[in-house]
Image (cartoon, rainbow, N blue to C red):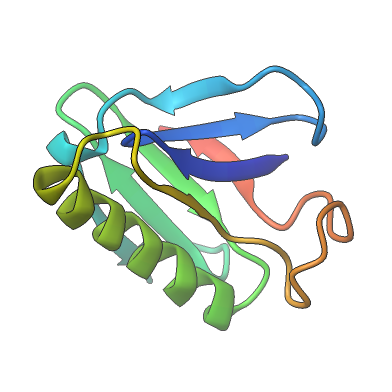
Length: 108
């Protein structure tokens, strides 16, 4: 799956050219935190008022990049218009399509 942050939303595509599916409607209402006490490595959680989404990154470096990207998106959404930015975290070398499943979505 290919995850990105667009217009204050967390979205994903099963394949890079697929239609976007919204996972979290409004990141301004969310918090993000690392998950340390589960069996899976490199997990983090995006918590909204209505649901919690647990994601797993490829590495600790990517997990930190995602946490920072979500936090930056939340801060930016309060400062700017929602459609004026786009954040994407790619695989370790930043090549689109190189790593197909670098995050696994687990909806809790």
